[in-house]
Amino acid sequence: MVTEIESSELVTHGGNTEWKEVLGDYYITPQIYQDLRTALVLNGYSIGDEIYDIEGFGSKAKAAFIKFQKDNSLPVGQ
Figure 1 (cartoon, rainbow, N blue to C red):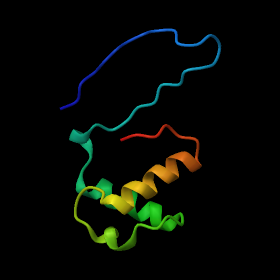
Figure 2 (figure 1 turned 45 degrees about the horizontal axis):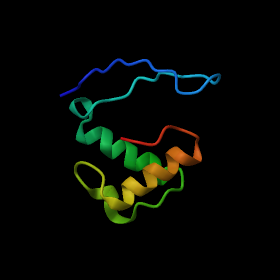
Figure 3 (figure 1 turned 135 degrees about the horizontal axis):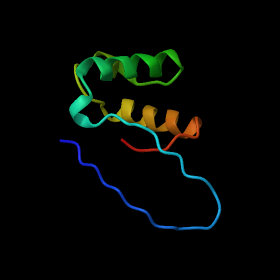
Figure 4 (figure 1 turned 90 degrees about the horizontal axis):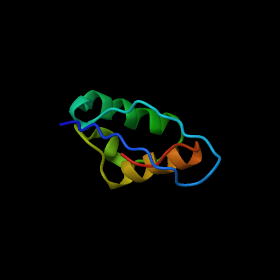
């Protein structure tokens, strides 16, 4: 289930906000998880033997995904 929330609140003056489209859990298929794990490995992130999982991220893949987000100045989260 995807929930849409709209909110506006000025937290700090200045700066920019960038909105990006993200996939909700409903749209993420086992193939997308597999593609993400493969991309992490191809880009040098270690996920151990979790590349063979059928669905979702194990703890190593999740840690690698978060590191990728941080390394590329991306928002960290789901």
